[in-house]
Length: 503
Picture (tube, rainbow, N blue to C red):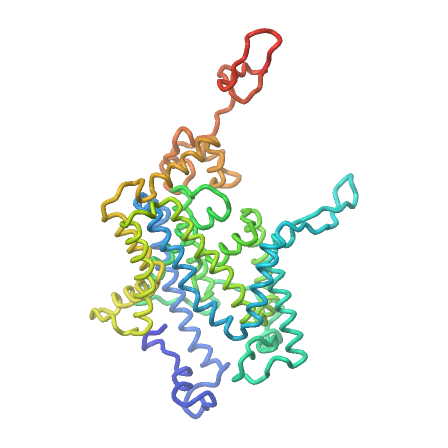
């Protein structure tokens, strides 16, 4: 959209003539007219086509197993800068929101910290109704479950009170104006009560080579960020590192989500969201069921225009305070992967330092010199500009290259300890913890079909013997679960063979 052919004429007119410009006098259609709607709708259609076509590439990369193959060469020194730069690179977004009214942002940060850290062990009595027991009281750790929600609601209410009492300035040029809750009140009044989005609501999507390849660069950066997010989410959830089939499936499903988002014309693709991972770290809630129920709730509430418009009244400083906490959590998760690496090695210090520092420097240089990449081909320029302006791609790719080219042992690189930890986790639990990555409801049926062992995104893909489900007991084999009725033997316990001793 930054290309000259898609430049917004209204933005150009404001830049040249000031905010009080008369668009009609310049020959531009009135804002809200049919001609104006067509001007922005054709841009949305171009984005739709680019997202849908470029996302096919992501689907192929995921479901074909190519991403899983590349993971064989990815270790902690490639994952650490990728995840860390996800959080650090977003500090501008957090600071820009928070700096609109620092006192409100600091209040939000204080409330999140108070609920999630200092009051995490405080249980609140709540009423519950159980069948056969009637009404009872149950203590729930509400502060550790909903710290972000409580903090944002309280800060939101504080901003509403300060707005109603005119404590906050009503002049847009004064500092603190963005903390008012009535800035976007017209959005709430103009929105419809019910609106059902549908594919093609802006017209038939259009496709061009330049836009597809430009969007493809964003898809590549998104896939790399998602791999880092998967590992970060697993660590914060207390789950084992995601296996190859789960990462393949995740990338493929994200591609499908992007295709659907493009068809519906949302104006953006879908990807794993670092802020949500930070929220998992704060709330300690990583349940799959919670995410599934939340998705259903979002589908329903997404059709209620008034409900969505209500969140437009959340002041920017409140969001900025929340960003400060969640982005910091993501950064810390990235750095926590260094526990597997030998930090006394000058090799590892070199790779880590150069990857993170260059991951900052290159995007900053491109932001200051947006036209500096000129290969003579617009498509190549777009791809390089998007990739090199994405810090997590630059840092992660450089870390990946250096880690796999500079000589070093697997123990020094942290790969040996990292993989050993995963293997020990599977062996100690019989592979049961890895089954959290199985497909729900249908996994038992898929295990009985041999062909699924060769499909890269299925949980049975190349599953080792120690990671298989226990076969049903047939009455002939010995078991070690302590059940004497089936001829149990526990090799860890010496048992005297007499009639009075049973294990």
